[in-house]
Image 1 (cartoon, rainbow, N blue to C red):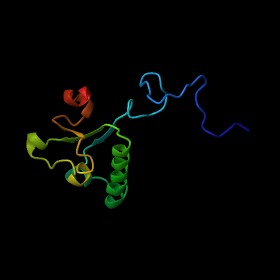
Image 2 (tube, rainbow, N blue to C red):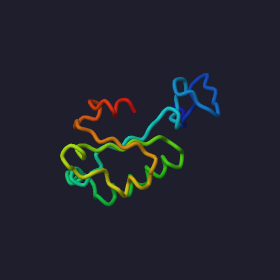
Image 3 (spheres, rainbow, N blue to C red):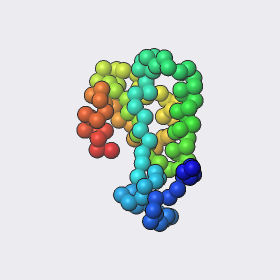
Length: 117
């Protein structure tokens, strides 16, 4: 029967400061929490779970990222362009140092400012 416990990769040497290119584990130096389109008018289309649960779970995720000093990006679409409602304030207030990007493209990866972050 195979060993079902998580194991370090062969030759792994844990370091207190991780090299984001060499270290196989997620850390604040090689990861970012990105939350996209948590806007009231967009969340209306979410029917796979209760909205209160969705927000509660997301709040926990943001608090965890803040606790571990993981960079955070909040991105919403069309706020400055066509007066869409912005990213939910109840989430933004949990991470006041997060980068906020207002996209003009629906696809975040087509937005130059987003990709640069």
